[in-house]
Image (cartoon, rainbow, N blue to C red; front, side, top):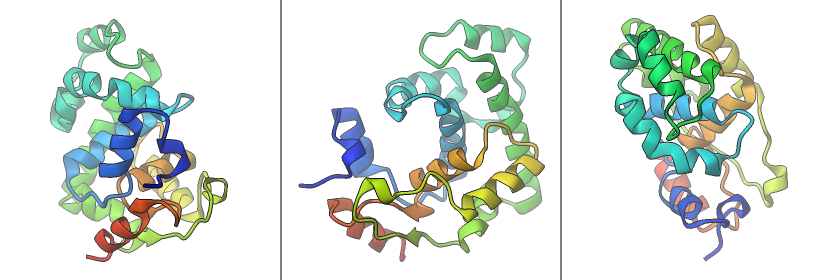
Length: 191
C-alpha cells in the first residue's frame, strides 16, 4: 500500500496519515485542537507534535477553548514547566489568545466551523499532485485565511501554518495521486 512520502517514517505518522490527515473536520473542538497544534509546530517537525499530542490534550484541558481562555499566570508557569508539550512562552500565550479569539468567532458566527470553512466555500479542494515536491507550502486561500485570522486576533496563524491546518482538517486534499488515501479522502470531501 502506497502512502504519501512524508508519512512513512514511523507508526505514529502512518496512523495519523491513514486515519486523520485530509479527512474533513467540522467539529469545533477538533478544529481548535489542530489550530493550536499547527501553531505549536512552527519551526518543528510534525512528528514532534504528534509525539506530544496526548501531552497537549492533557495540559490544555482537551482543547476546551473556554477553559484555555481563562488561563492565568500560574497556569502559564505550569505549562512552561511541562515536558509533555513544547515549552515556548510565545506559543503557550498564543494558545490562550487564540482560545479567546476562537470564542469570539463562535459568538459571531455560531460555530467556528462555519467561519473557517468559508475559505473553501464549505467543501474540500482536491488536488492531484504526482509527487510531494509539487505540494505547495501555502496558497492564495491560506493567505486570505491568515490575514482574516490575524484581523480576528489570532496568533501563530501565518499562511504556511494555515495551509498545514487546511491539509490536516480536510479543507484541502493533498494526498498524492498514488497514495491509497487520495481517492478515499476525495469521496469523503464530496459528501
